[in-house]
Image (cartoon, rainbow, N blue to C red; front, side, top):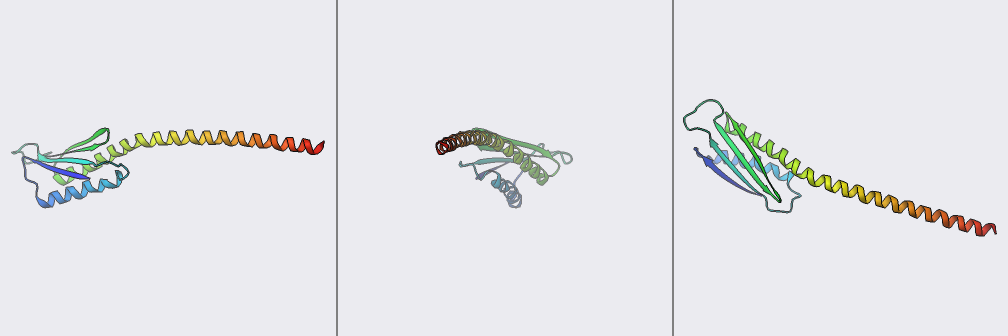
Length: 140
């Protein structure tokens, strides 16, 4: 998983980058089954340079996965709180993304199970007829 950081109207300190990397890396467990190089672009910045109070910090994260781009944006009063909420949003987006594939897999599994049950029924019917034929021959 490749993580790229970008700063807007502020400098990213090494401790802040380490914190953000640790939080974003925790998403690896949700995308471990995807056999594709995943890129995450994280932009951390201030909404305005003069404002001191309120929702000053903005964190955007964009994750590129096969066939889709997952995106999360948060404005908050503290940059670390914003990073946490972006991580939670991305986690939900990943679960939605994986849910699409899980539903297809479950449908396929259900279909093959029904086919297997039908074939088992036909085999048991054939066995019953064989047993009936053997009984009839024994009676004769």
